[in-house]
Image (cartoon, rainbow, N blue to C red; front, side, top):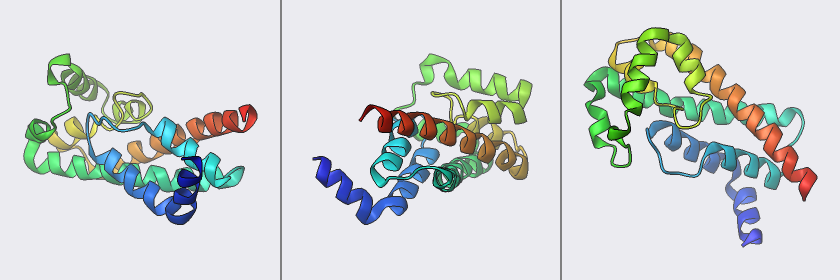
Length: 165
């Protein structure tokens, strides 16, 4: 299994990772493997270290943010009715309402901070889009915070894997 995963990473590598993270970014309430596992595992298996981690996380943050932008634009057009089409989002938990309240109170900061909090990452795309928030401001908050999150997670976890293995 390890050889299969390694050969998959070397054969398809970054393009596969970018597509996966775009999909992760565009699915609110997603049941997928988290970025905290996928990106560091890719960096470890591909042997990415040093400044190349910044290049990797620049690509992964762009892919994730592009997925979030797709949700943002869809919500701008159709409102939060988009959430009704998400089968694995627990609307009863109150998370969506908390996201709306937090966004209404903090706007730019809400997007920035939520993108670094597991469980809320990408969720701010919905109230931001539905409220007609500026696309430029959305991207100015979403991309840098995602880049910081991906970079810290990758440096910590990929570095830990190198140390432990």
